[in-house]
Length: 151
Image 1 (spheres, rainbow, N blue to C red):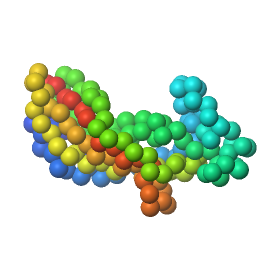
Image 2: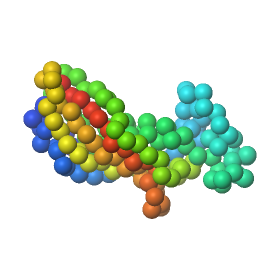
Image 3: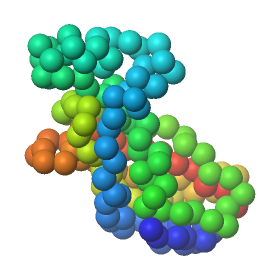
Image 4: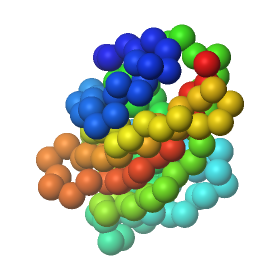
Protein backbone atom coordinates (compact mmCIF):
# COMPACT_ATOMS: atom_id res chain seq x y z
CA UNK A 1 0.00 0.00 0.00
CA UNK A 2 1.14 3.48 -0.86
CA UNK A 3 0.50 6.27 1.67
CA UNK A 4 0.42 9.94 0.65
CA UNK A 5 0.04 12.95 2.90
CA UNK A 6 -1.61 16.16 1.71
CA UNK A 7 -2.48 17.69 -1.62
CA UNK A 8 1.10 18.07 -2.89
CA UNK A 9 1.75 14.34 -2.52
CA UNK A 10 -1.57 13.58 -4.19
CA UNK A 11 -0.55 15.82 -7.12
CA UNK A 12 2.70 13.87 -7.41
CA UNK A 13 0.66 10.72 -8.13
CA UNK A 14 -0.37 11.96 -11.60
CA UNK A 15 0.53 9.29 -14.15
CA UNK A 16 1.53 6.75 -11.47
CA UNK A 17 0.63 3.08 -11.78
CA UNK A 18 -0.51 1.92 -8.33
CA UNK A 19 -0.26 -1.76 -9.15
CA UNK A 20 -2.77 -4.44 -8.19
CA UNK A 21 -4.77 -5.28 -5.10
CA UNK A 22 -4.92 -8.74 -3.59
CA UNK A 23 -7.43 -11.18 -5.04
CA UNK A 24 -10.96 -11.23 -3.60
CA UNK A 25 -13.27 -14.24 -3.96
CA UNK A 26 -16.81 -13.49 -5.07
CA UNK A 27 -19.14 -15.58 -2.93
CA UNK A 28 -22.83 -16.32 -3.38
CA UNK A 29 -23.40 -14.79 0.06
CA UNK A 30 -21.91 -11.46 -1.10
CA UNK A 31 -24.05 -11.55 -4.27
CA UNK A 32 -27.20 -12.34 -2.26
CA UNK A 33 -26.47 -9.53 0.20
CA UNK A 34 -26.03 -7.10 -2.69
CA UNK A 35 -29.28 -8.35 -4.25
CA UNK A 36 -31.09 -7.68 -0.97
CA UNK A 37 -29.56 -4.21 -0.66
CA UNK A 38 -30.54 -3.20 -4.20
CA UNK A 39 -33.74 -5.21 -4.69
CA UNK A 40 -32.17 -6.81 -7.77
CA UNK A 41 -32.99 -10.50 -7.37
CA UNK A 42 -32.70 -11.50 -11.03
CA UNK A 43 -32.21 -15.26 -11.27
CA UNK A 44 -28.80 -14.98 -12.98
CA UNK A 45 -27.53 -13.59 -9.66
CA UNK A 46 -29.43 -15.49 -6.95
CA UNK A 47 -30.90 -18.74 -8.30
CA UNK A 48 -27.97 -21.16 -8.48
CA UNK A 49 -30.12 -24.06 -9.70
CA UNK A 50 -31.71 -22.16 -12.58
CA UNK A 51 -28.45 -20.36 -13.42
CA UNK A 52 -26.68 -23.69 -14.02
CA UNK A 53 -28.62 -23.93 -17.28
CA UNK A 54 -28.38 -20.22 -18.05
CA UNK A 55 -26.03 -18.35 -20.35
CA UNK A 56 -23.16 -18.19 -17.83
CA UNK A 57 -23.30 -21.76 -16.44
CA UNK A 58 -23.91 -20.48 -12.91
CA UNK A 59 -24.71 -17.38 -10.95
CA UNK A 60 -22.85 -14.15 -11.61
CA UNK A 61 -22.18 -11.00 -9.63
CA UNK A 62 -24.17 -7.88 -10.44
CA UNK A 63 -22.18 -5.42 -12.55
CA UNK A 64 -22.75 -2.75 -9.92
CA UNK A 65 -21.51 -5.11 -7.21
CA UNK A 66 -18.30 -5.49 -9.19
CA UNK A 67 -18.08 -1.71 -9.52
CA UNK A 68 -18.72 -1.20 -5.80
CA UNK A 69 -15.77 -3.47 -4.95
CA UNK A 70 -13.51 -0.80 -6.44
CA UNK A 71 -13.86 1.05 -3.11
CA UNK A 72 -12.30 -1.52 -0.75
CA UNK A 73 -9.82 -2.75 -3.36
CA UNK A 74 -8.61 0.80 -4.06
CA UNK A 75 -8.41 1.55 -0.33
CA UNK A 76 -6.01 -1.39 -0.07
CA UNK A 77 -3.75 0.22 -2.69
CA UNK A 78 -3.72 3.88 -1.65
CA UNK A 79 -4.01 5.51 1.76
CA UNK A 80 -4.59 9.26 1.58
CA UNK A 81 -3.87 11.21 4.75
CA UNK A 82 -3.52 14.88 5.59
CA UNK A 83 -6.74 16.04 3.95
CA UNK A 84 -9.85 17.48 5.57
CA UNK A 85 -12.22 15.63 3.25
CA UNK A 86 -12.15 13.22 0.33
CA UNK A 87 -15.19 12.47 -1.80
CA UNK A 88 -16.14 10.17 -4.62
CA UNK A 89 -17.13 12.79 -7.21
CA UNK A 90 -18.37 10.36 -9.84
CA UNK A 91 -17.52 8.32 -12.87
CA UNK A 92 -16.57 9.34 -16.38
CA UNK A 93 -16.94 5.93 -17.99
CA UNK A 94 -17.79 2.40 -16.88
CA UNK A 95 -18.01 -0.82 -18.86
CA UNK A 96 -18.56 -4.45 -17.85
CA UNK A 97 -16.83 -6.50 -20.58
CA UNK A 98 -17.11 -9.87 -18.84
CA UNK A 99 -19.39 -11.35 -16.15
CA UNK A 100 -17.95 -12.39 -12.79
CA UNK A 101 -19.03 -15.94 -11.94
CA UNK A 102 -19.66 -16.72 -8.32
CA UNK A 103 -16.62 -18.54 -6.94
CA UNK A 104 -14.15 -16.62 -9.09
CA UNK A 105 -11.61 -14.13 -7.81
CA UNK A 106 -11.17 -10.49 -8.81
CA UNK A 107 -8.53 -7.86 -8.20
CA UNK A 108 -8.10 -4.20 -9.02
CA UNK A 109 -5.45 -2.65 -11.21
CA UNK A 110 -5.21 1.12 -10.72
CA UNK A 111 -3.47 4.06 -12.34
CA UNK A 112 -3.79 7.74 -11.47
CA UNK A 113 -4.55 9.32 -14.85
CA UNK A 114 -4.35 12.96 -13.74
CA UNK A 115 -4.57 15.33 -10.78
CA UNK A 116 -5.69 18.94 -11.17
CA UNK A 117 -6.43 21.80 -8.79
CA UNK A 118 -10.11 22.58 -8.11
CA UNK A 119 -11.80 25.47 -6.35
CA UNK A 120 -12.06 25.32 -2.57
CA UNK A 121 -8.42 24.38 -1.93
CA UNK A 122 -8.72 20.94 -3.43
CA UNK A 123 -7.57 18.60 -6.16
CA UNK A 124 -9.46 16.38 -8.55
CA UNK A 125 -7.91 12.98 -9.19
CA UNK A 126 -8.93 10.82 -12.15
CA UNK A 127 -8.16 7.13 -11.78
CA UNK A 128 -8.28 4.38 -14.38
CA UNK A 129 -9.41 1.11 -12.84
CA UNK A 130 -9.50 -2.39 -14.26
CA UNK A 131 -11.21 -5.15 -12.28
CA UNK A 132 -9.54 -8.34 -13.45
CA UNK A 133 -10.89 -11.88 -13.17
CA UNK A 134 -8.39 -14.57 -12.18
CA UNK A 135 -7.69 -16.74 -15.23
CA UNK A 136 -9.55 -14.53 -17.71
CA UNK A 137 -8.10 -12.38 -20.47
CA UNK A 138 -11.16 -10.11 -20.39
CA UNK A 139 -11.70 -7.73 -17.46
CA UNK A 140 -14.89 -7.67 -15.42
CA UNK A 141 -15.00 -3.89 -15.28
CA UNK A 142 -13.10 -0.91 -16.62
CA UNK A 143 -13.83 2.50 -15.17
CA UNK A 144 -12.51 6.03 -14.92
CA UNK A 145 -13.36 7.42 -11.51
CA UNK A 146 -13.29 10.99 -10.25
CA UNK A 147 -12.24 11.78 -6.67
CA UNK A 148 -11.87 15.15 -4.97
CA UNK A 149 -9.63 15.79 -2.01
CA UNK A 150 -9.68 19.00 0.03
CA UNK A 151 -7.11 20.46 2.45
